[in-house]
Image (cartoon, rainbow, N blue to C red; front, top):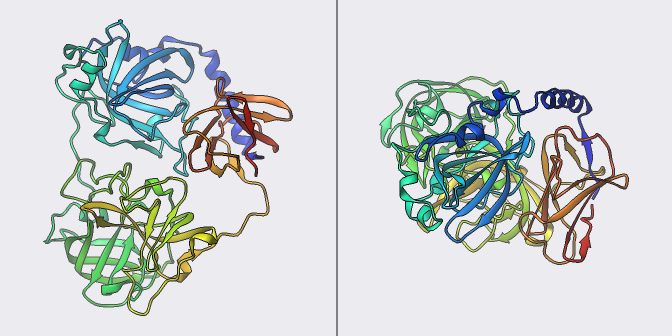
Length: 496
């Protein structure tokens, strides 16, 4: 597999920063900054702590709990153990934030009993192995950090099963991410007049303020019931709207002065809305989204009254947004299909992938889907949800046949920007093992990284013939990178 890495100017800048950082050594200001491992280790048992932007170096998997080992990115000898419930999103060499309670193993090793875990992603939604440089850049400003749900909590019984005494996990209260775990946080409502604020209004109650300056993403006549969708221009929030009258085209700017908030099939919407057109600045582009991120978690997190997330979802709730996703058709049910981009999401239907529906289309608006044998497909539509076996599950709702596209094969080699990652097909014999295996990266006959000494690189494989390659932000700009992995005496080369 050959990959071209772009962005030489950024590499030079980061190269200088890293060298300046190296000269700083292990200065006290770095060792003891807030969120450091050293600061956490200095706290007695039962103290709420947070550890920020650390590298996950190993996972010891048990049936009921996992033991993690994390280290500072600039010092491999500064480590801390952490105990959490099994979380399928965690893999070694990820950068993570941990929040929880300090405890002690029977052998004297200190351990952090996780209450919350965050993973750093790149702009494409894949694990980022090179986040902001801790101690120099503001890690709180990283825009793609995702907090995993509270299933990460370790109970007292599970801690006891791991040999940690109940006395070491007693605390005044659990920390709440993000922020200082010693300071309880309150939930601030979104701004008045925003789409997000409308989603916080209980069912069958009226809007409390005008929603202005929003863009139409689904036009009148595309969806049944006269429904349209509107979206914030920064593409951070969208919602279904059923106007009381009028027609609206994609790209129209509208305002809503009245309406009643309701819920249908798990999705919040505004019914009987007084909508007026105030301009036509143009259509918004869809947000590219991996399927594991579609739907997202509850909004706000932990809420049962506002917009609920999908089953198994985590991260920011995106129900109501215009998104684009891609994948191979895994099942064609005629009026709907399932497509999988390698995320292998499972809604309990027996089919792998995200469900792409047509039951929402207006009369006369139809869509023909490709079959399982026709390869990959790109689909644009509304990130929505439905109820399946009493669970809220992901659904993608395209607007017309034009939202279904068969991507052309690129004529050039794939490129991976520095500091990001991509997922590729692994054309190898057999079924690659899950998680991290022995691998290396070669450039010009020279080994630049291995699974034992990754030097900022990361390669992970899945059982669905996929592999993910993450590139450090200071990687040399070059073509002809080769990725190899081995298991036992067999060595295979992903073909590209």
